[in-house]
Length: 286
DNA sequence: AATGAGCGG
Image (cartoon, rainbow, N blue to C red; front, side):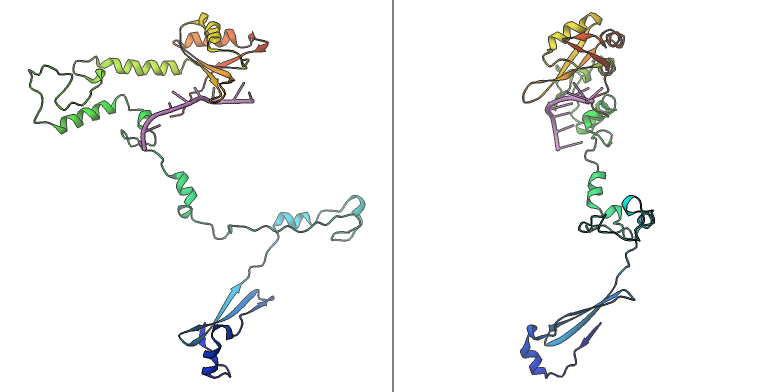
């Protein structure tokens, strides 16, 4: 609400006073109605503007649970005390007020919360299938990508397609490197076999825990070799100190061997410790 | 007690 001030002072007086001479702001609170009124004055283009702001103050209600707690029966030394604290048996400490940053009634819409926006945002997008993962982790890496590359290759230079007499079909005119598995005449089944084998490896990984910290890869090699061919041993170590973390992963070629290794070595006493061997969970989830 | 490192964009 704005209105030009009508005071007993002359215009000249008011101007001479400047901002400092304006009436001070006032603040009133009507407890019954819960309404706060702030009155301020300011100078604008030689006119004194009076601003009245009114605020409705919400009454703070005790939560139901607090109200219920206040109904509890007193006990012990305070059993017969009237309501309220009795200083002879109750220590009062200073009240702690909590400031709530967010109001229940006006929740910030999810979309406007920059944090949730960030966390929901896709960090990566696969170049192959546009999925929510790195290109290297794409489930279609072995099937879709070679196909896409082929199509792209064909679209790029349909005119300068190599003549049938080209002496080097493995190195086409564009000079772009083509991995052996994708070259003309390459065994198409091979890439798939490789990836399947990797998968098989993944499924034949065991985790060994409770290793003494001076166990080395070679010890593990010796320990697990009897169960079958091992493709990889990873002994977890601190990157900086090189100290063993006391657990390791063993990849067998065959799942059956891994299974027998679990049966055979779990509970095995080794270096004054009892080893624990189980199936490993995949390291990075797809 | 405990589920690897490092690629990329």
